[in-house]
Structure formats: structure tokens, C-alpha cells
Image 1: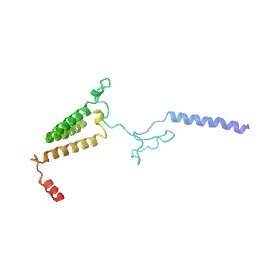
Image 2 (image 1 turned 45 degrees about the horizontal axis):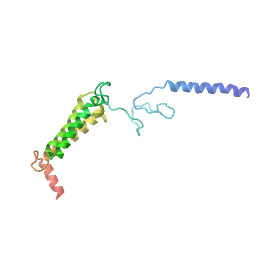
Image 3 (image 1 turned 90 degrees about the horizontal axis):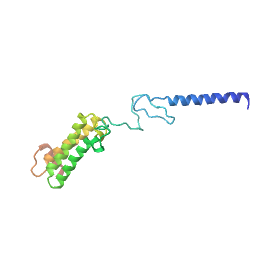
Image 4 (image 1 turned 90 degrees about the vertical axis):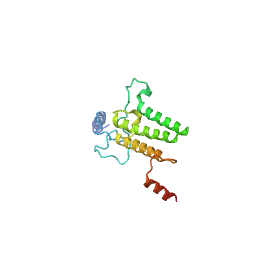
Length: 170
């Protein structure tokens, strides 16, 4: 081994140690920054990436009850909505169509209201608060309106929709 080679080896080891220390003290600068192959954050901007490589917990996605409560008690918002939808499906199967479908729509609207009012709703939180509220609310209102417009003897008559239906079917 020459003098030049032995002097070069400690420098390489020192650089490797410095890189390891830098990686150990690394901090991610924003919530959506995904690490690269070396573990360093690739992005330092707030702009969303073209391809999503990681997921974030939806806001309000925490437990709806303390952690020491039994599992069903922690997820009471989604269980309430599912129980009401199940009861509505049972009523629909028992030939009480209008009441059953109105109950299903009302359960979705109640889910939208719970998503808006409660700070933590457990598994009822799927996406952002706004997206969940709009999705649950629009689906609930549409199901209730269709239940009220169902034949025979509709409770709600909207002439524009009736004319559109007859025009497209003819």
C-alpha cells in the first residue's frame, strides 16, 4: 500500500460517516414529501406530485371514542350509518319500498352531517371532510328524491324529469 492510498481511505470513511449522520438527522419538510431511494425527501414544495406514492390519513379519521373503549364503541358513527342502511334494506326486502329507500337516503345524509359536525368519526372518514360531506349528502338526497318520485302514486312529481323520461323512452 502506498502513502497516497492509505491517506485516501480515512477520507472515504469520514465521508461515509458524515452521510450516515446526515441521513439520521433528516427531517421531512412537508406532509406530502415522499422519500427517494436514499431516504431523503425528493420534494420541498407544496405542489402535489404527478403520481401519489404515499397516503395520508383523512382528517377526522381518528377514533370516535377513547382507545380503551371496545372496538364497536370506537367506530359508532359508521356503525350507526350501516345499521340504518341495513334496516332500510330490510324494509325494502319486506315490500315497504318507499320507507326503506327513504331510510337509506336519510342514513347517508346523517353520515354527511356527522362528518361535518364531529371532529373525529373513525372509519366514516374516507377522504377529505369536504369530499365525504358532498359524496354522502348528494347520494342521500338523490336516493330520497328517487324514493319520493317512485311509481305508483309518487309523493313528489317533477314535470321536467317526467317529460325527459317519456321523451327518452319513446
